[in-house]
Image (tube, rainbow, N blue to C red; front, top):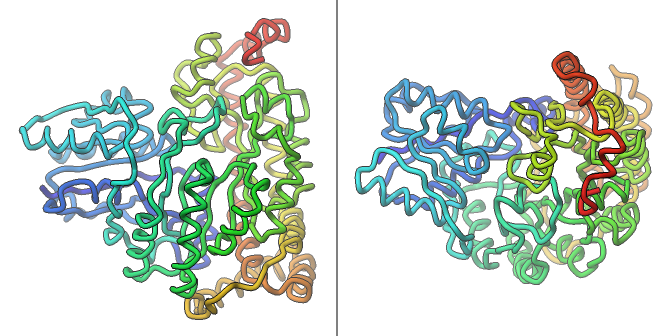
Length: 535
């Protein structure tokens, strides 16, 4: 079987970073880990070619070569995925689809005639698909009734990737999260019992990346890396020896819950293993909203103190924020802005709340008759809410746009980033020099020169750029490289904040013309009647 694996396009988004990536001649932040894992699970006597539409178009020769097309992606990639199904059929190719989008909304892909739906987790459903192919079946829907162990998942086919196009490589240690956040689709897709690979298994994947020549950043794509703290510590205890022996070829980033700050042993292990940044789901500084959305883990300790603790350890903090929770009081956008400034978080992912398919939030709002028909949650920052909120949607949208633009004001961003890196206390490494892995290239020199010209000469940030840089060099020189990388992200946000403003305001105008004022919010008296479990 000749299989063409295609990863659909992402729309321009918070994480697309085109302007920043272009500084270092990269085309995408992350590769399609799901598809290279699929390729590893399928029969290895099959032939595979992989095309990531985010870095290149599908060549005619690949279309002609393929006997079967396999697609995978997230809800935000819906538009291109549906087009690829239709294009595959136009060319007479059978097409199989899987991944989070297909699993969450299979009916959308059935509507465009996808031949095979390989849903849920591939360790269980791909063997069903293979058996169907061997029986000569022309169509099929393959679902699992349980969650697989990931200890038998093979090493992904990283050899199918074009390494030079990506800024990071991806690995996965665990699936699932123990918490119960109402808006989250991760616990729907992967469950609340975190399942982990073995330390030997994960290190085997890193070894394969090393053998193929990758050096630099690796993103642990776990939705909560520390969901199973015992197993994570077992992994890190092994990983710290491996990475020191290899002279630190990789630096790691991941996602974790805020309770990481309460486990000093875990933070120390991460630092020893060369973890340099972590993404936290903060969501909101409003404790009442956290309780409404059942994110109780963020109410147990001071959020700002937790962030300070992790930053002082040497972890660059990225964080997610959401506006539009039920019962939220006016001024939420300003409160989030003040919190970001107070805690010096450089990169703050900020979105309007959306009800993603089949989440607890989606089911509750459907029961309450508040979902807006024809509008699916996409998870993108340029999408309006897809339900009737408890305060006027135009008020929420205005607060969101103004807060987003304030957070990514260039001068505020540089100052916040400077304060963040000044607070870090980078400890000397135990073993390994690290000099072999991170040599300065001409691309790096050109990128720094471009940053210095744009931010230090052309723009109004010129004085702030040089003053902050010299103070970093003088007071905390160990973070200079990481600081300069962080300053480069504003290249993306300068453009993206205007895109957010334009698209939200455009959608809001359409929304207000289509729906009567009476349903733009849930009146207070109605909110009072919402069951106590959610209000």
